[in-house]
Amino acid sequence: MSPLTSLLLTPFLGALLIAIVPGNYRVVHRALALFTGLLMLLQALVIFAGFQGGGTGLQFEQFAEWIPSVGLNYHVGVDGLNVGLVLMAAIVSFAAICAAWEVERQVKLFYLLLLLTTGGAIGAFISLDLFFLYFFNELALVPTFLMIGIWGRGEQRNYATFQITLYLTLGALVALTGLIALYVTSGVNTLDVVALKAVLAEKPLAESAQKLIFPLLLLGFGTLVGLWPFHSWAAPGYAAAPTPTAMMHAGVLKKVGLYVLIRVAWPFMPVGVQEWLPALALLCLGNILYCGWVAMRQRDLALLLGNSSLAHMGFCFLGLASLSVVGITGVVLIMAAHGLLAALSFALNGYLHTRCGTTDMDKLGGLLRQMPFIGTAIVMAFMAGCGLPGFANFPGELSVMFGAWKTLPWFVVAAAWGGLVIGGVYMLRAIRAVVHGPAKADFNHVGDANYWRRLPFLVLLAALIWFGIRPDSLATSIQPVVAEIVKSAAPTQPTPAPAAVAATH
Image (cartoon, rainbow, N blue to C red; front, side, top):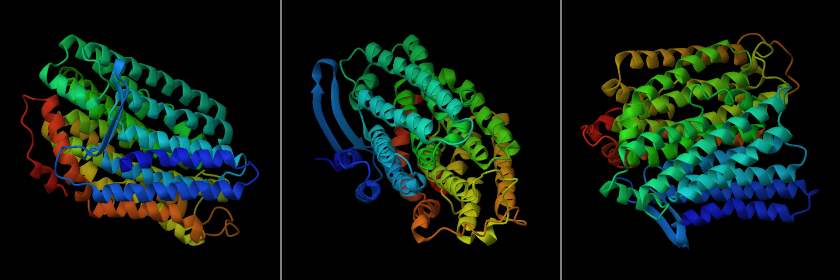
């Protein structure tokens, strides 16, 4: 059995054990969930450490026929494109389970849903079959709707639940339509990504089919990611979500849509890519500029972080629009880095909401003196959000900007640089409002986080710093796979030399 299968089964087995334990044994539920999260993290670390980078082949692969009549099989594997995302998902999942201490009611059900979300996210990243890829993504999304509706907070909780359910359901249906159309028009009886890749390399889809299917995948999965103007569900949803749910959705689940676009849409439909790149280059500016401006106007920290997350997704779409090895390598780096950063930011936001009773920045202030550890973690997280060197976001954003500079119009690049400035402004203002200045309320009775409560923050910060200092531990594995995707998506364009990416690091 592949270690990937073992990793995939772990959260579901953990959920099964929790389901067996009676509901009044809350300590046992928490212990089982923490043990499951730790076991997943250790397995992901072993897989990442054992991965041999530098090539394009799949590793830790496992294939088993399931329903041959429709070409449906169990097929998992990792290459440079998804091995870092699997590790990121495991790190965030463990941190989210640690941060679930705030949940005090229906603890058993909450951990069940959280582990189902975790298993779905892992399954989506490792699946190489279109059915299972879509199925696991949906399996991860459905529990998030329930968690927001049952354990959410704020007066707008019900509105946010309905909005996020409506948007993501419609986006998923559009994406499903595109995947079904890909299966039907490919002319082969298989849903396997590797087999489809081989067939379409010899006999590409008709141009008319590519022009129809590509926008369905782009708009469907783009809605799941938060592509402007289909983004309005994200910030209110994260503000209303319980902390672990916001960490998992903003940190992990939003990356699944980007992953599918890179894995399937870009290499399989080069004609559709070429037709839609100009539009995508403009749409991503909506995320970068509009969501950045909205973030500048926010006085609630949760809404600021939600809009900041959308702005970061704009840089991912910018890198995809560049259709360059440098740019798309930067996209994958940002996906891993932003997963860690979003989880850290929403974990800190949840801690402030639970301990201080508010995330209104007008009511906060001086927390660096009253909560030195939490205050320091906030400063580090928000500086990472600015793209400060030494944190994982910096090499990814720099690579995307280099890729955009080479291929996109000057005004798109200029607008993206402006977005970086906007991001620096609202993050620095948030630091000033929350952790500096005079205390606006007496939070001395709250106290700083104890050693146990610090664990999820330390894990996420350590990962952000490690990949910020050693981005090559991801980039050297990502580059060869991305170079192959770019060659498939733009066979007439020269592929930038691999040294160009290495120079950014």
